[in-house]
Image 1 (cartoon, helix red, strand yellow):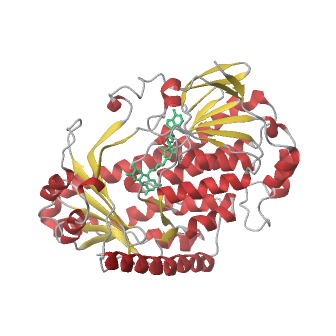
Image 2 (image 1 turned 120 degrees about the vertical axis):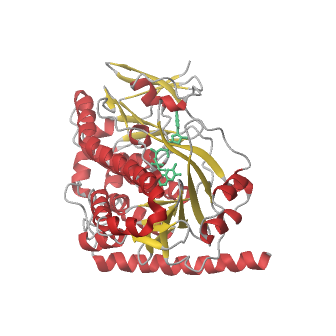
Image 3 (image 1 turned 120 degrees about the horizontal axis):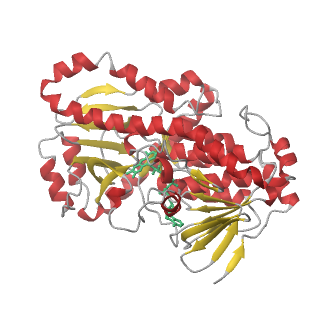
Length: 489
Ligand SMILES: Cc1cc2nc3c(=O)[nH]c(=O)nc-3n(C[C@H](O)[C@H](O)[C@H](O)COP(=O)(O)OP(=O)(O)OC[C@H]3O[C@@H](n4cnc5c(N)ncnc54)[C@H](O)[C@@H]3O)c2cc1C
């Protein structure tokens, strides 16, 4: 069996370059080390700390950037052999964008270059049958203006992954940090650190193991002594939300393409979320109420056409525009907040979906994972000796658990509220009468809380300028893409 200490690759002068990567101190958040402070810190303990991150998803890559920036020696192990350009758009909310800005102007610029903004678009809840708007989420753009935050954006998951990889390569110029096709199978902790056993038979050792390996985390399974996630019964590990999730990403020529942020059509039993992507594509998610363990229904398109046959034309047209092969079907699961079990044990810690998988309807999973990486790197930057590691990791858990639990709870609450609301829809005036004065305040407070972790402030004029740039580029590239599609017909 091969046993390797993760190579210490970061030389002192290299560290200095990494920590100096931001050209000016302007805009550095209050609690973030200035580049100069970073150089001082890099000459100490941190350059000798070896960190392995299991999982090179959005959370693992972002954490790697933050830790490398702090001068630590990081290796990311990713199970998949190559990153594929798959996955539709996700919302990176103001808090996630703010954290990206806080660590690197270059990263934020590259994210914007691959995104479309929520600024000057309309988002909210619509009647699933009549398609009338019931409530709008003005807070998405109102709060960033009030609190000087960057606007939320919409970006393809694979584009975001590419931008993060590019940034990781930029900050760690002397070697490849990410090892693809390398899966962690288990770990062993001793006084000397953590031994990480890989599925290919290799063993690596490090000072800290971070489990960023998603909702079916191998690292968490061992830490929490769960049944293995390879066992077929995934319902024992995560909680079923009461919905099967179908999704598609067709091209759509809808008239409100540039004006829509996202809309949730709610109707009897189910809801249907529509979110314009780029290049004329529209991401839709059908949340179909189903009992746990309801078998997969194929063909999906026929099932959905039937389920939504009396719904608004916007819903029916999107299902009709999607090929059977383009429809993805899964059980929608999240996890209950881990209040009693810490995400840290000894020198092993979890982040992202591995410890707080969140309902997608709140658009916060990635933002929370970014916040984790940012805060963990901040806290580890204060490390003076190896003996402090486990205490810092416990403190990290204590600082993150309340916020992540609240956001997880809000995601679930939204979903449960929709379940309660839909049977009342036939008496719309009653729903409007009861909820109209209430919901704007509820949504405002919800967005306010979600956006409240933002270590970066941006002048509102600058935010608007960036958003306008994104919007103009989005319009040009979409019109070009639609012309190409029409020409090819
Ligand atoms: C349908 C849907 C829509 C969503 N929409 C949004 C949205 O709009 N906004 C938002 O913020 N969030 C959204 N989310 C949530 C978001 O996708 C996640 O919160 C985010 O991707 C979490 O990142 P992660 O790195 O923790 O986990 P993941 O992205 O799951 O990454 C885990 C990585 O670990 C790797 N891995 C697994 N096991 C091992 C192992 N043993 N060894 C090595 N590598 C391993 C996997 O291959 C994977 O690359 C959505 C989620 C879903 C399902």
